[in-house]
Length: 69
Image 1 (cartoon, rainbow, N blue to C red):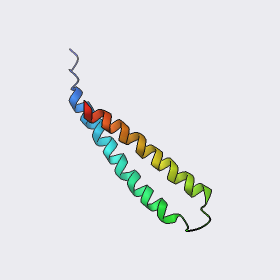
Image 2 (cartoon, rainbow, N blue to C red):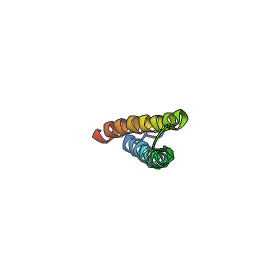
Image 3 (spheres, rainbow, N blue to C red):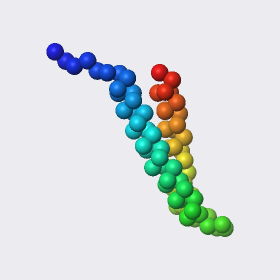
Image 4 (cartoon, helix red, strand yellow):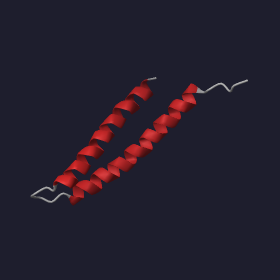
């Protein structure tokens, strides 16, 4: 007989994973911003920052959706 899947447990695991990744991204964003020069921003550094911020925003939306359930 297959085990019953605990939906709440799965959702909580997803929430925990998202929060862990968001914490990592927060640190990456801070570190990347510290590498930005006051003038003449380097495109690769700016691209890294934008990628981290985009991923953070997407995870924030996903987290909000999961917490509404």
